[in-house]
Image 1 (cartoon, one colour):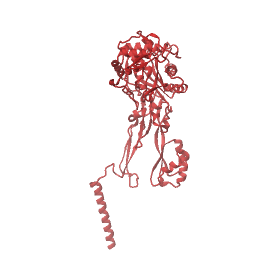
Image 2 (cartoon, helix red, strand yellow):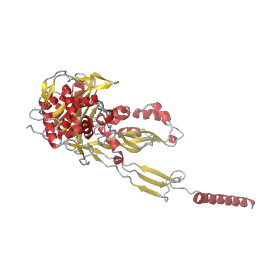
Image 3 (tube, one colour):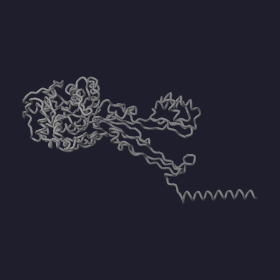
Image 4 (tube, rainbow, N blue to C red):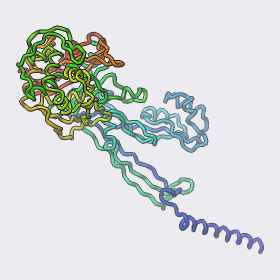
Length: 543
């Protein structure tokens, strides 16, 4: 009888303890869903949005890959496992050994495993090895538009995040919304059949259609690659746009990086120089100042300037690029022969205050607001910081820092009737006129002057026969430690075709070409090579 009493007493004590515990859990400190040890949550990753060119050709798709994981407690032969895994993964036996912590239940080893590698590893039949399906970015055109697209990396929580370019700027739109599976499990982690279960579906990211034309991008990259080799330039950039909408048709900067192996490159390779790097534009800037003077009726195309020799401004002597002078020359001739002293005279007639007004109107010193991550604003000094020499040198593109996209946007306003437009990459963005820089009449005048600059410039360029093409070369020295290095230049050319109603406008920029320091001998020929291909591609017949 005493034994029965003892057992009964123990049962009573156990029952009371259970009641007390239940009272504590449900009344004193109830578990919220977030703290409930029996509720397990699993995030459902959405599919990231795809990226297409303007004609529906894919730039970025998603491809199934696999996360390889190990359950160490099921492992029988660690040495054999490491050896066989490294035979396929090629990441080093020491790296694999360091990852495998035998005290843990589950360990992620490596993500992005291809289907072929997964099947090879699965054939080894290791019970401790498993796979989870993942999606990774797939680039059908490889790195054709690396800077433009950017890449998808990981944040501190190991979630996918877009960096640079389109992936960075439109990250939220491309990412979508994750889903959630909530299940109630027992103490061993097994689903409770009659327990609570809830599933919230994920929402996939939105697809993007770009203004970029894959065919134009291919033409530009091929020509720029050959141009860098031919002119032995350190770097190069080409931007092509529709001047009437500022839709970007191509953006190539070299050197670039491998999108599939971005992690092997340092951050300097990820910067899109077309929007992120400043430079002094040199003589490509002259048409902007000339157009401003025309707009203010300070000069007319056939007005004459007496080009006699170097001019002295604020204790500095300014010369023409070849130190040759022609006497009386027209405003048009100033652009044709790219006369620095002639442009100083034009700037003086315009006046410092008006000159600064037009520089701001052209958008210098502020971002263009292009929809790409990493845009710089360039540098336009405050009016109080301008000296007499600054007003003089800016007329021929020295002493001001701008980005290539700013230059192309401002120059486009000269040829599209005077509208400063917001450049964009996403095709669904509507045309946005930020302001008017010059009148339609002035635009027609400066276009004719730029056609003459190509037809009668200092160098006889090889250009397509039967087409009117306008443009301007630029050669600017690179400032180093407070002075200019005469042997290191940025050679550039801005051109548009066909000139009467341009289908495209392009900026070519070569940094430190070694075969010649001049834009007329490097960037200009490269522009005409690209223009020939584009005229054929757009099926534009000669006049």
